[in-house]
Length: 339
Ligand SMILES: NC(=O)c1ccc[n+]([C@@H]2O[C@H](COP(=O)([O-])OP(=O)(O)OC[C@H]3O[C@@H](n4cnc5c(N)ncnc54)[C@H](O)[C@@H]3O)[C@@H](O)[C@H]2O)c1
Image (cartoon, rainbow, N blue to C red):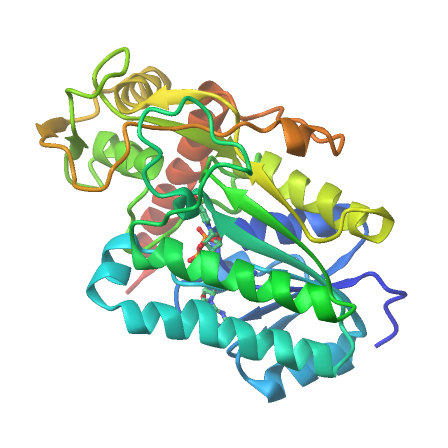
């Protein structure tokens, strides 16, 4: 298919962040071609371009995508990202996030696809203690296999870039949250481990009461501080960085966050204000390895011309709640028409 260099392969395009990026790409005039095995993604989230169902490690699936759509570049979201599961089964995480990623990169090189944007994570920084803001130069000392696998793939990419004409960039996400303004797509992990959907689910009665781990951190209200970036802002960052890769940004990494810290209790209050109902919660001891504060210095990403416009807590919770309400009513509708 002739796509005039506008076809982008989105590995993991059926997932939470990948689907929002597909929407942003299509709005910008690109053709987002999703490659996904649906191991954690949703079929209903693939709505902005064609789908190739398969594994990123499959030479055949990659060949089909590249040959059918004249792929010009790749955004790579396909990974396993549950910290606890990575601790229980590190080899599975190395296999999924490193070995398969490397096979994917090799297939792409064979087909001459040279532009590659990689989804990394703040988990590469490990526990920075009470360091106020993390820059891209902060030490990378992952404290779980998930973070270690992302750092390992970053490193594979960096060395590959040294000796080949593969152009790459890396975004280290902090906590992606919120949903598209249309409420057509949103955050649907299963199991869910992210605070905003867990708090909304607890308030709506669709999930159990929220556990607040740690109330004695050295933070303003004693609960942990995290940096939240609206998924639409994150999608916009992908477009900016990707487009700048043909004009200078090569081999660079960027923190992608909102640039502000919000405590767990602040998030609970924001959800309560949005939904007008309490978030049932219980206090629990700190979890080992949970840093008190993880906040991004986003000045490097801002230097590309990008800036967050929706990453305030109010917009995050409002859009996430709208999507959850819609999901709930769709499920209700489906159950009422089932005979
Ligand atoms: N959600 C966050 O806050 C966050 C934070 C930091 C980093 N990240 C990273 O961003 C990326 C996307 O995260 P997400 O929250 O959208 O996750 P997600 O689980 O919703 O999406 C991942 C997608 O990749 C697909 N996939 C996984 N392995 C695959 C394989 N081998 N072949 C083909 N498809 C495969 C899944 O089916 C899913 O659609 C991940 O790499 C994750 O590690 C996410």
